Image 1 (cartoon, helix red, strand yellow):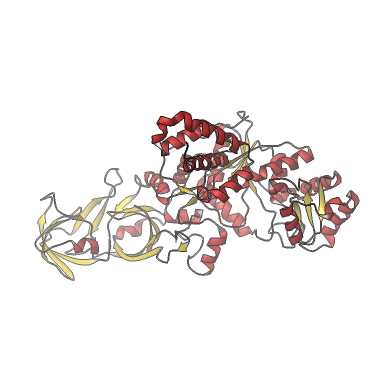
Image 2 (tube, one colour):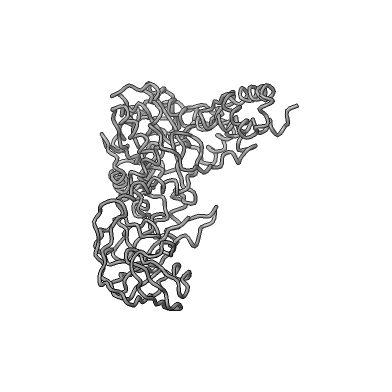
Length: 572
């Protein structure tokens, strides 16, 4: 007899896999998953296969909304994002359905209501790569039809972020360029009975949608709806009237229960000013724009998946061409929220400095931290197109970044929690040190005398009478320890098995502040220790580096020069 717990586990796996992959799953997939987690069932494959087959058939008959509802009710842990480890790079994206070389058109439609982040990068890169893959066309379309939240500051930040990522577009436009087209399509929907003006109160609309009941406005004739449309432009105040699509108030997919197509917004648009006050909803705008722009494959993050039916329905009602719609998972880092609702209060409360704070996953912050755009692209491509919720650990991106910064990062010495060391009998007044241990990046000349700084962490392990090696300089026999250290120079390259430490000459040491970003959130709690600041000494050669240049401080990690007096830790 099959254990009820195993049956429950099979149903959870089937629901989760179906929901993540378009509403359908397969017997073989679930069999593989259950045998992977319960290898003892390999002797009972026939028995377990029958249960899997029955369960998969049952799950596949459910709508996506019903699948999600059951998961939320019975297996809420299955919806929690899973951490992903570093994965090998993939050869490329999967093929597009119905794609023809030279005919593919993709687009990236960000809303200019905040600073771009790693999630925007994923959407832009995937759509860009598909256009390249098929020798097609890629459109940047600013989705700017909500004047309440959109600003030129954000519009500019998105353009700058995409330029930094190295993404090129064949066409750049704004959704608001086509306001007259939206009006023409909206009036056509009203005149064909496919849309109507609703003047119900917001709470009544919500109640009716929950109870799947039509409101009285949906029974008004075309003439009355046209009059109300004109009143929306002239008399009605925001919230007093909206245009709704005549969907299906009985639909299991709540999105289809007569959704909003237009609403009144009395805010000044950042480019159009006060020219318009009736603005299309996201669904109306994206449906029309993708169709008239010739988009063949429209990719967006999977929270929009339930809206696929509505977008197709709008275009069907207007007799317009429909693009193929595809979906992928959102991209977030563990402990680094991308939500504006989380980040904005942190800035207002002074917990983070700005959108370029190196603890954030915004593109400005990643650039300032020292993450290379090439690394972001490789990292995103390695994740693939799964719709499974994932939380990537930040070190997954670091692993890709290390490949791009290692070969070109100059090696410099730096000491933190510095202790003084005096070296007697030192025969040198200068030393030449290679800028890179492998690549030919030249050498730097460092003037020295007998007085040095060494790191406090190294000083803790130093005992009286032991020998240490000052990297690139030689061996020192320690004769005095305490608040300050002293020793005698004994030559170059003696005993191999002695501590090897970096140093900075006191004669020309340059003091900087080292900023070390750490995880911003531990679970749901803000990490008050998420930004460490160290006062450190480094070589004078630091002053010759360009701002933004990547350095590897020996035995510390990769860092980016933020200014003459500050560096930001990138990663180990």
